[in-house]
Amino acid sequence: MTKTAFITGASSGIGRATALALGQYGFRLVLTGRRRERLEELAQELGQVKTHLLTFDVRDRQAVEAAVQSLPADFQDIDVLINNAGNAHGLASIQDGDPQDWDDMLDSNVKGLLYVSRAVLPSMTRRNVGHIVNIGSIAGHETYANGNVYCASKAAVAALSKGMRLDLLPHNIRVAEVNPGAVETEFSQVRFKGDTARAASVYQGFEPLQAEDIADVIQFMVTRPARVNIAEVLILPAAQGAATVIKKDP
Ligand code: NDP
Ligand code: 8X3
Image (cartoon, rainbow, N blue to C red):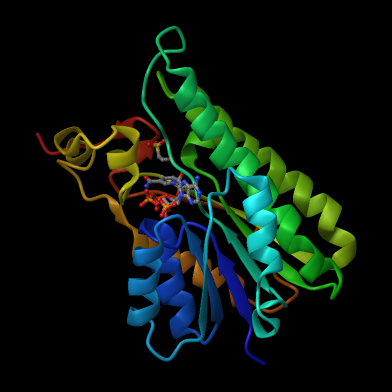
């Protein structure tokens, strides 16, 4: 039977690549993000794959709830939820950090993940089936200088993934956390607020992961037999040893 996957942040990077990977695997897809035109382009690229687009900001709880409630009947039974939407905003010491950046990170990476999960979960608990993949980060497991609030937001994703796994056990819902290292997406453009040179420099001198590398792993995880939960994965570029330890060309 065709399964339905709901992907947040499908308009770019890891979410977009995951949509393409799961589409190839025969999933029906609910694709979400704020940039409608990006989602429309992705739906075009997916061709024959059945898609439904939802445009909302994960920070807006009412918008999240309304969007999930608006799903047409054939997209309402969600089997797989990929909680991917999120970003870093800024890279600054705690004493110099911009509180607006802190709000943006905590509201999207933590509260947004909660709002989306809370809205989608009834379709899983009602049927006692489901698989949730939360996109954490190496930053949730290692705090680096000036990463403070972003690292805290991803540490919260790690704690929530464990908590969700325990709470949802009676409903046979698998919960997993995927923790990438450096992946070349729009992540650094967002972190450095459109400073493309600074963003590009993050990935210079070594071969970073591509979004497709993460999507491959997610596809593998969500297509395992029902008895298997790959609960935590850390995926690094071969040149990365720790959050800020990267072997760069001399
Ligand atoms: P991108 O910037 O390429 O993609 C981020 C996605 O999240 C976009 O589709 C964006 O959509 C969506 N998004 C962000 N904020 C919101 C919001 N408030 N409401 C709705 N959607 C939102 O970055 P990545 O693909 O790299 O990031 C995906 C996830 O991976 C994030 O959680 C990030 O923290 C995590 N990650 C990334 C790593 C990396 O090195 N790239 C490493 C480890 C983790 P739109 O703007 O259209 O709303
Ligand atoms: C993204 C990876 O190391 O820039 O989560 O925080 S890192």
